[in-house]
Amino acid sequence: MEHILSILPKNPVALAPMDGYTDMPFRMICRELGSAFSFTEFVAADAVCRKIEKTHKILQYDEVERPVIFQIFGHDVDTIVEAARLVEEKKPDAIDINMGCSVKKICQRGAGVGLMHEPQKVIKLFSALKKIIKVPVSGKIRLGWSDSEKNYIEIGKILEGEGAWAVFIHARTRTMGYKGNASWEEISLLKENVQIPVFGNGDVLDLADARNKIYQYGVDGVLIGRKAMGNPWVFSDKKLNEISYLERVGVILRHLDLNVAYHGESQGVLLFRKQITRYLKGIASSSAIKQKLITETKAEKIHEILNNFQPESIPVLI
Ligand SMILES: Cc1cc2nc3c(=O)[nH]c(=O)nc-3n(C[C@H](O)[C@H](O)[C@H](O)COP(=O)(O)O)c2cc1C
Figure 1 (cartoon, rainbow, N blue to C red):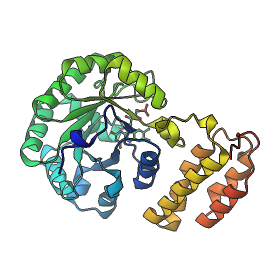
Figure 2 (figure 1 turned 45 degrees about the horizontal axis):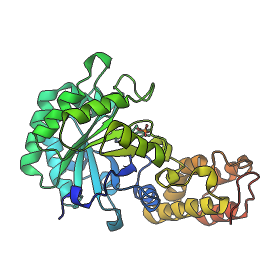
Figure 3 (figure 1 turned 120 degrees about the vertical axis):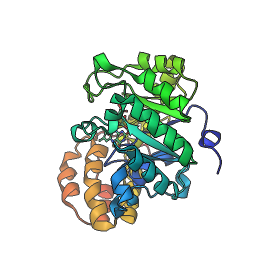
């Protein structure tokens, strides 16, 4: 298998992993609109080792999604390494270790950003991964545990020293959660301190903003998370207000159909509810159909409602 670096486009901009959102259907939609690679939602290392079916399903991907990066989280070195060994059999292009999750029950157990708190464990982990895992490995980190405990440069250097192919960084600390602004100056500082590719992440608005960040901060690539929810066009050159209702509906319904194919109709439609409310944001008068859409259980009906709806103020550029 070719190394992920040789199959990635230059300065890639891609969808960030988001638990509960970036399943195969949404990743496919984003890929079709320009996202450069696929990053799975995280999976718990112990659930992988216990062969939990639901966990393994999260790692399903379509061949057209390559390059595909799997993401694992956990707090125990042996369990993470064993999980990586097991999922490697599914032939991802790379495996990432989550070192950024700030959810209390995850990071206080030493997983997610909790790993950054234990540099020695990170050394042990990546050193073991290097010996056992053949596909390239990376880490997705934050700035550190808190303002006074920022150790992203130390962790970045550890990753580099232990053979990681890249480092992904969300430029906030654990204490910040998702508040405040992502500190791109610090991403730039990390880039100056390591030789491996650095992917910046945090508060990126769209493709144009991502390109600016690459230019301004010298990063090798960018991940976009929340701004892609309900707006996969962030990966295209189009602005949302330039996209006709017809074109939007085409993408929304394709997403729905992919959801149904992947999750089955009842689960696919149910899971689509959180997506549809985001897709409809900003479409004037759509509140009239929103209620119907989020209570509907049949995909066919959703097609009908969206196809028959006449929005008031979205430009219809057929
Ligand atoms: C709902 C949600 C779920 C997330 N799940 C993951 C995850 O599974 N793995 C991960 O590394 N980061 C996860 N993140 C963090 C994002 O990948 C990203 O680092 C963060 O949202 C900042 O980027 P943004 O400002 O572009 O959203 C999640 C974020 C959100 C909002």
